[in-house]
Length: 333
Image (cartoon, rainbow, N blue to C red; front, side):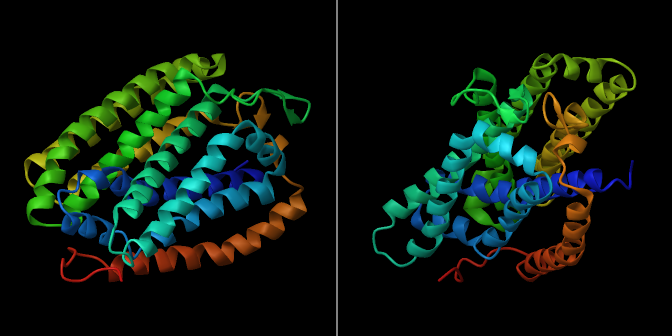
């Protein structure tokens, strides 16, 4: 089973999505926090902290979406109609947000592009969370096609997950700025991190409690052996990460709160994976059912084996080159 091509590809796509979330999460979080910058100089510094890496972070979104289309075409054909509205809004928001990076530095009145940066980041994060909530709820399938309505994705649970992702991304943005800045803005973001951390953990707890009741299979998986072990282990890991996060803030550490906040997302993502497995599109479409023919999976895997190390290498290199604190006298021009 470990060497089954469909499951290898499911793991690669899961890895791409998780990498996108943890990399572009703080990137979007800075946009969400953008209006709280106390001056144009502070907002310039916030944008400059991600300017060298933001577009590379979004490579992983393309990889995840493109991989889904190439190797799980049935899942793609079902998910897209089900989530057409939030996905379209997310992509449009990312376009406006990306354009703001270029135009904001070329105009005298920055308000329009400040609004585009904030609005694009907020809408993209909200739509990602809503899409996640809609997937967790399950997608109606009849035969091999989506059988739901236009607005099945819009429910109280999906809105809750949307808000949770917005708050969580804002936490990542705040802790990233704690890591990358000094002085007044660092103190401001350190203060925000306390409140955003508490809100993120509270929302993760609420969503986690509600998730098993979205479908009977989730309830069975989490509260029957061996799933009950995860029901104990996952909260314990979150408790340890929470202690690390609070200790890092209290001890004025720069890196520890950011890594701990990333850990919140990694553990939450693993929890979603435990709920979903072996479904590709809950509650009925499995990984094997959604997969392309073996020959297609093998052919695409060769390309992934070449491209993934390259993408990982230039991502690591970019973060290494731009490591350390941001110099306020230098920026994105």
